[in-house]
Image 1 (cartoon, rainbow, N blue to C red):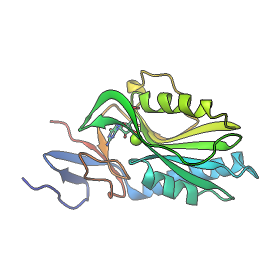
Image 2 (image 1 turned 120 degrees about the vertical axis):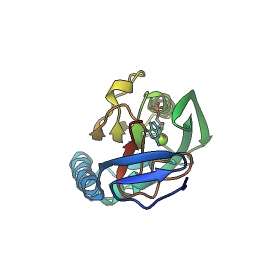
Image 3 (image 1 turned 90 degrees about the vertical axis):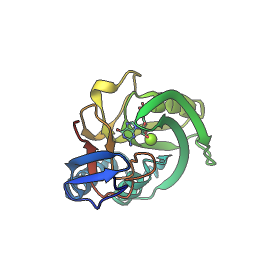
Length: 186
Ligand code: 5GP
Ligand code: MG
């Protein structure tokens, strides 16, 4: 079986087949809308975008360029996933070097599944005493949220099925896909 076939309406990654869910155009239009909403919200506030690595790096890059104003960006690496299922444990792999006290923080996450990652990160952030915290998630699986987290802006709500593309991977592959693909039904 091929490891990778080039994207159109479907893509093969390792042993799994994924079908198109959102096109590059769908994604671009939605990210622009989110950028405009955040621009309105943060006039003259110079927010600090914090991108949760690795999955959110593509979304964060586009979102901050859709933001029209002065802003900064920082990165934190947290992980709770292995393969296509959550391992149930959130580990901070790489910390933030920025001073967060008094800052307006915009947390940028690729996808909210159980909510564990964001729940954990919120607790960490709150302890740093920022001026405000706003959370933006590119995708959210509403059926799968077991940890209560407030997400202020969501790109798309999706069903509870594993997705790849636009920064999201399946065991390392698929992050470069410009659209979003979901696991095909067996
Ligand atoms: P949570 O902590 O909300 O359960 O999981 C969030 C993290 O798990 C996301 O940041 C993402 O890295 C990973 N994740 C959750 N669902 C998916 C999915 O459908 N596809 C991929 N590639 N990663 C996912
Ligand atoms: Mg993530």
